[in-house]
Length: 296
Image 1 (tube, rainbow, N blue to C red):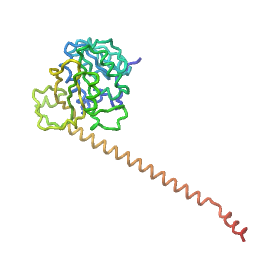
Image 2: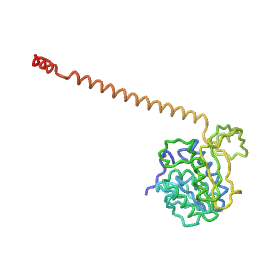
Image 3: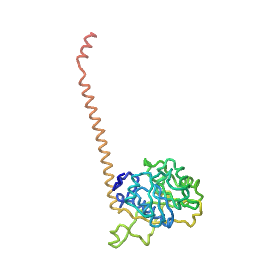
Image 4: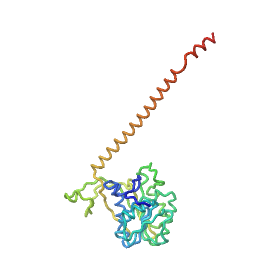
């Protein structure tokens, strides 16, 4: 297989080289960074590892990371672009994970469960590969908030629905919530211009109902998770002015497509009217005259 230098965006997969500077980029990186404290010196599974950036992040603290994805193209891309001495990329599905029984300390599944038709088989597979004291971290969009017409998603869950499902497989489940806020950053020039900066202090000055969270992140285990915590954080990933410009451009593009569609409908109607007039004008008047002669 020839390894591609780039992966094409498919509407779901996050590819840093393409999505850098967008909200999507920050959302995904934040989820992986939040898990870093849990994977220190652990054997980790990153299921649906995609382009491999998440497996690479986890490998900084982990003893070993398995990045598993159903796409062979993604696996080859990850091997080339996000390699690591303690990372092994494997092709496989969530319902047939190519990992031995009870081998994994921490299984990480970001934005996966909603894509798997048989999610119960998926959760059974996670239980199979986890050690008895293993931890499962799973994130998924909030069904009440997330767009409903995403054809990639076979299932979407509310918080209560997800908790009910997870508690059938794990004794303990703790929820975290990820949302979107407008933020304001104040930095000196060089820090303002650089890509990444670890902030020492972040102040949150406004509340938000958890029902309005865009994503849920659940930490699950059969062992107590009272002292198990993922890292809370904030990702500033898209300048407001650029986001507004993109929103305006997308709105203009959408209106342009709507206008083109209406123009097409009008053109079709005008064509039908012209053809109908031609049909009426083509009827020979001689037939009408001859009919009157016979009747007389």
